[in-house]
Image 1 (cartoon, rainbow, N blue to C red):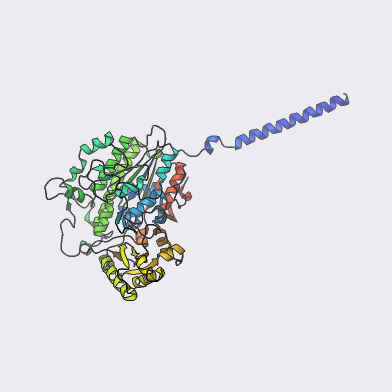
Image 2: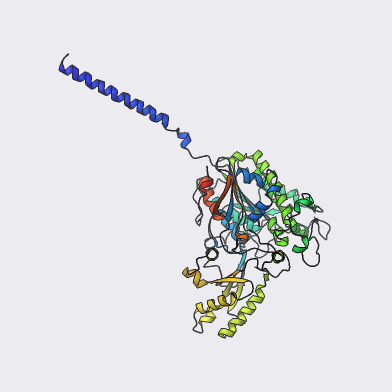
Length: 566
């Protein structure tokens, strides 16, 4: 064999060996590399259902858990992710403020909804959170100040971002007994329906449309709200199930009034369904039942979860009645206990419907609340707590008298815009005095006034000169530079602003008002379990944005709840 032939054979042999090794390595790599399908993101939900139970404190979920049926709250608790330490993490815990946080992911200092209503700092006119003089209810009477649009909401929602991402093909529908419950969930580009107290109809406004869709007209024509006339709200469970609830006489002090104890009869003096009857439905189980029934009609009529464009839809439902019940009797009452049990059964039926219509495997369900609730002052005092109501009118009179004695100027405190005081800086500074002097004088007076724990001034908020405390942080988040008053007051625990002689109210930065349920259920996206990590309601929007693979809302400050995601 020639030298050249030997070299040629050796070269060919080494090329073959190299090719063989390369092939084996490639085959091995292909075997180890997952298929492209396994790297793909999970499919998006066909339907996202956002449930907000107005006025539901977290503690009631835990206290009554053993009595829930299997298909409602317990289904969310066992098949979903449940955060026990979830909070509406701002200092003014009211309905409009909390609803605004749910799908914007923003705090009031950004979203601009600082209360259900406030006083305009320039004109001193009263402003309702969802009022808009440019729009009226469609086919229903509209009074000045009625809630008709999200004009006062300064940021967008995850629903708006979903519609942006899908070229407005995704549908976003929000439904509530209260206008603010629907409008602030619907965002800027969704559609809101709310119950009219005068007629019992679910209606929308000219902000959203010029004419109703046929499915809504068909639903309203059947007058489903009238079927509750003459019905009684009785206890759902055996009497012994309510043994740990407070005696009615504690939460219903003084002389008896009509329908202040169970059973409650839904009727009116006229003997037929009218405005008096329709408004009475708000306090009790029937309005929530109506809201869920209308939601089902919307699913059918709008084909929610079956969008022909193959994109996700969002259905927001704010269930308003628990708030009315807790305001009237407190969360310690049999009435609140029974209402929650009835709501649990309603949710079970609604979930069964969604399972059949859309499929729970295709649906992401989220439940939270806009705020919690304190016990009634009467119950708190029985348990040796300092608790009472503060009449803001009397407080303002005393404050102005104090300021006049100190500075020689009258009515320096112009208005009370709960929980803030609006000051007359112009009058004060015209005397060569600095506004900080006035603010500090108001704060010093306030913290000595019965029921007031603390006060924070505009100068403190603007300069960030606040104590390093949880309450100060929550109050900073709740204060909006353009909309809020000049000195923000913090009530003592179990105190609240009000001049009623029974019932209770929320609005504080304390945990009984901030700690709310946060449950997320979705087989393809959520890891079931009880999560003890602190979470906030503002975490909902970025978490939904992550699952839907859309841009988070502009004002979103929450985190993605990654520990609960698959």
